[in-house]
Image (cartoon, rainbow, N blue to C red; front, top):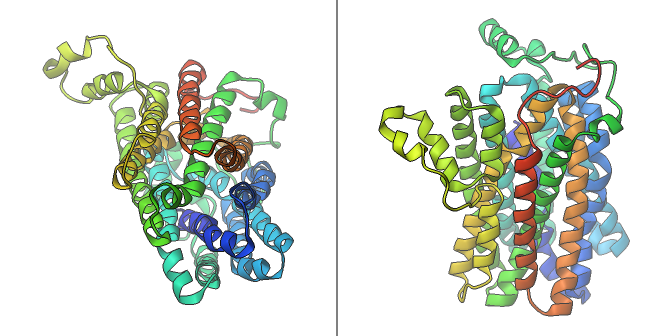
Length: 449
């Protein structure tokens, strides 16, 4: 159900396709189109911290239900707002952002309570696979629905789907396994014994007096390693999601349906590789590799070193000579990989080649879901919602700067290539910061933890 909600969350962000006919009908420049697309992020900037705090206190069931209901309403009303006025359109996109800001904190909070540490990466991988498939669904079906029903088509279909999801969610789920009507006693005891986290009752906390002071959360560099990682992840994600259809249309002169298709393939690959990364991450922990090392490998570790560590999963006498070798060259799974792939994208002469580079970039980027996203649940599981909210706010600021900045950059410089190179450099810098300061161990933020 969480995966489905995240799929709807991303499918509802269809402005990267709808922006093309809207720009033509209203005569918007590239820079102003970027401003319109970023209006979703203005709202998204407001709610993650508040939403994360609410979900840590009231639980994911209630907060997620309200979030999906509100963003589905905003999606449904968007085409009417576009016809009414520019301000109405911006307001609906902001409301969409405010409501969707609670989705990922809810995901993190509920996974921390429903899954033991050795299963969390797979759970996050599956949930985020839904998130990425939402992009593929939105980019694939939006042009088709728009060709049949005009601008109203995708917004009406996706909006109504959200309301249907809420009905199922409210009737079939619970915030904690203790309150589930479907869980067996055996599974409940397994979660309680393995999870090592005090759960919450519906409506109020059982073990915590409240959320710790933000200055305590922000006083540790490991918190900042997550914040910076989320910022860079969001920068790359929203730049690619918002500008790739326009990039393929502008640079390679493909029509809107083809432009959407070239953007769909990478997101589908990201869903697959993200789940694979989750399975691999859990396997590494189960075989005795430390949580800290596993998260660094997933987020931003060199490929040769990663390969050497994975050999530890097999009989040591088969590979001891390889494991003993020092790494000769450094690349990254979660951040260095996308950085190099974006540079390759800028050199491609035909649309099929940059589509391959883009697929590689976002596919490797999915490994970071088993880095900073799962890491939130490990360093302070009872505060995973608010920590995700704080880091998501930083990510939203980065996404606004990246989405709007890309439009102004292209308008001023006349090329997408320089902006992609800048994004690559930022990926490299964040990979280094993460490796230096992150940890996979439980952290004491206040006297109650």
